Length: 412
Ligand code: TRH
Image (cartoon, rainbow, N blue to C red; front, side):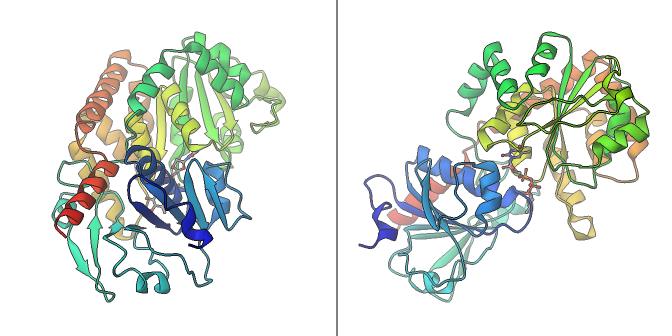
């Protein structure tokens, strides 16, 4: 047995190889890392994760060492996937994320070893995905590859949701100490005081195309003080635009903390009084801590695929910016999801306008109305909770994969 197979060959569930190419952003590795850990902890399976970009991976899993070709983090074997031909022995379950094509020599070695080969597809709420879910596609090596669609209905593969997530969230939410420690850890001890005040905490994770100026305009009209938490590297021009667009209505304090970005304040801005908006930069957080940010905030702006799902599980109001695709395909996908979401039409229209460059003024008005109307805000909160509760009844993605594997093995 060579080094590459030694650690995987332990008692327990099957060996699983997950292949991940980082195409852009954080979603590819975000989904794969979460799935790897969930399969390992819940099945439990021996998981090996192949990733072509360890530097991006490290952003959400700081224990990852980009210079190591092989390493173990959280019980997962991580292989730096390069062009060098591999002699690794294929696992019983092979999960190829988003049609990323495992190495050809690996594919050639799969027959007789691999019992299940899945292509994990991108998430979509469109009804057609259920018809394609779990359909086989014969491959040249003689092993069938199955389309596996995550999704919102019981006839898809479901969503990633760790078995202990709900309990972890609940205990965290009930602990003021944990919230304060969290703010301390992310370099924002000064924001702790806002926790006890009637302040709206908002997190902002979006693409450069988001109508963020309309957001700033809405926040400035908020009757309650707002703390806006923005990860480093998201909208680098935000502070500058806040100054020029909003004429000093946004406070950008110098946090003076090593971890967070310390924005040098314009001298006028530093003294801008609350109520108003305090814009604070935060570090890009490890995945588990990003969950805590979503739990902490009263409103979360999320994007792509994985942060969107985490915002759903956080059970807090959120606005989703969908990943843009050519020919406005993404708007159809957004519409498909909105058809499932139990929120009011106003909330859905606001979600559409956050994704439509031409409807910025509408977005400002809608968000302002929602933020300043406790009843509407509460109703939005309730619809998010209901949606999450209903979705929690479905099988999770890891459960669906396990059940599908067991059927495949039992049917020979
Ligand atoms: O980064 P994204 O825009 O990724 C996108 C989408 O997945 C899109 O569908 C896909 O086609 C494209 O990538 C290639 O957004 P997403 O999906 O939310 O992924 C972000 C990940 O980063 C998610 O796992 C959460 C994580 N994250 C942290 O761990 N810490 C942080 O501080 C933040 C802001 C995010």
